[in-house]
Length: 250
Ligand code: FPP
Image 1 (cartoon, rainbow, N blue to C red):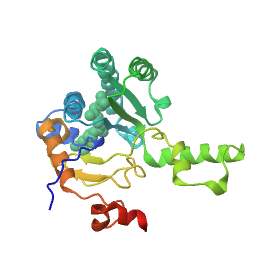
Image 2 (spheres, rainbow, N blue to C red):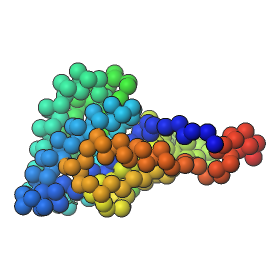
Image 3 (cartoon, protein in one colour):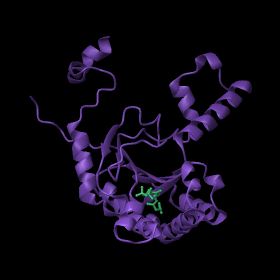
Image 4 (cartoon, rainbow, N blue to C red):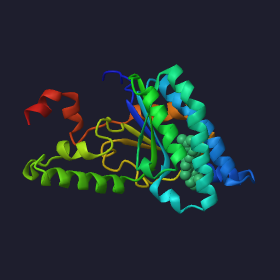
């Protein structure tokens, strides 16, 4: 048997969970957990790049998160704005491209403004991309895509009978992104929570027990090592993977 060649996930996506519990365990207000969570966003952005990942997507605010107490939502938005203002020069210096998925047009004006300028200032970088999922929900993304696709059919730009995943997926916000290879959720919870449902169809999932503020580069490396132990078959058999010619001949 040949030795397993370590295979790096190109795109890692993370559901950052456990800020509230981290704070509660210490008798602190929830927002302190989010504040520490922002520090982990910062360290993980660079940890992923150091480990050779090309794209990191972080689930920073879901559509459902608006239902949290107004005070917490306001604090999260302020943290986001503060974080982006602080990171802009660092991203430019370190060639980190920023982009977003989600209905960002519904975010507070101040957040939208700093997002716009950061995305613009980093758009030419190609080596490493940080994607923030903000006001994101997979089902909403699919509904928006279906609406745009239907409009394109009505306008004669798409033919309904030619419909395929390749065609339809061009209407998703992730159209120009590779699918995630590895999805990590922290805090021991084992749910997908409306995150990249279609894009993660063939992703490997790792559920890390650690709370997000405590997540380290070593935890990320361990998740990648776990990914390496998995066999991704994309619907094929193990034998076909070992002998691609047989799979192609089917
Ligand atoms: C889940 O923890 C985390 C969130 C709802 C949002 C994640 C936000 C951050 C890490 C900070 C802001 C992000 C950026 C990019 C600046 P939880 O509150 O659901 O934790 P719990 O399940 O323990 O209550």
